[in-house]
Image (cartoon, rainbow, N blue to C red; front, side, top):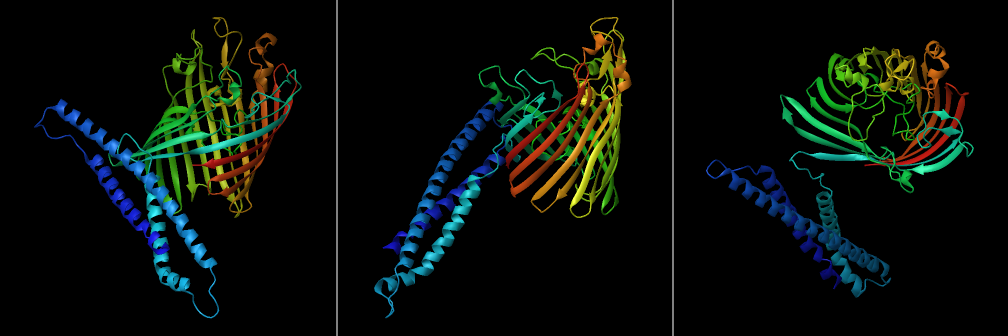
Length: 514
């Protein structure tokens, strides 16, 4: 009786194979459907196509439902088969010779093995069909990716943001310490692979997180607003890439390794120029040898100055945008091998800023970036910058200028705030799955300008001053998509009108990549 019962998967397998063939045919039909020639009226043709597409979608939904049904049936049959095999093996044969039950079961062993192979094959095909690519409004492939990230943290001292601290601040009335957890640094990304155009491969991507702020409601700290991080459209030739979108500044594209600080890159406002800036850039690689190349990058950027929008929904121009001139940047680098191999780059940034009433300021920056291996297990990377009026890039605490009074006043003088800073990180790969990272970053506005501030003017810049950050973390790749991390940070902030403050931050994270 068991031999007859285990034959049922064959019928289910034929149904599934038939379903897969129908699904493939329907998918190809939808992809190849084109409007008919001019023999019919354009309106009628469009209506007919819409009706056909609606019918095909309805049919696909039915087929998906049947797929789930077949998956359930396959699981049930697998369970029945495993129970039958277990029962047969648990019935021991007498020493005198095979019993009638053994004689009945023995001929069925080849059939059982064949059925197991068939069920495994069919289940794999159903899984492939079930885990198909993300459905898109076009016929081009779309890929979904991201990270689900949970952070638990503790602070000894007061900070500007308890889960992703950047500054040490004066202690609150409650004392100066905090503990909590957050899921808002999780990210979702989508990438679309488009057609070829002008000989280039076209692709685009978008990336979001949930660190866009909090609603003013009960326990609103757990309802992080979605936020656009980056989004680009790329045209890729063999040695040239043209990119338009919102991205990190290409002349400061490196960041330290950290799972505790994804909402803002590690060392932000303490030596790491970042911000996600609308830009158009061109990158060209010149192959120098089989293992090395020269990289030339140039682009136009939105000249951001770090100002806070005056309204929630209406966009007002910042001082850089008031100049009616984009920011310009260029970078020249030499790279050898993979992403973790040696590279050295130098870049320049230039922008114009109009703060009204004829008060114009020039923003500029010179940067260096490097990464290189130090033996089989160690590597180093980092950046350095020197510039003026680069608050829009996170320099000098986000401030671009100093003024002798409120900028709205016509008699207030405005000057660009000069600063220098940078960061460096040492990485140690203990094994293929465990790494340790240690780093240091610092942003330092020029003390000569700060000392020249009148006492009254200093109240306009309460968070301005030197900012240092020391980081030590370990990251464990438990599986290809499972990450565990423990991180310690020590922040030192010397602010105007305040004594220097320090904070110790500990962060434990677990993330799943998808």
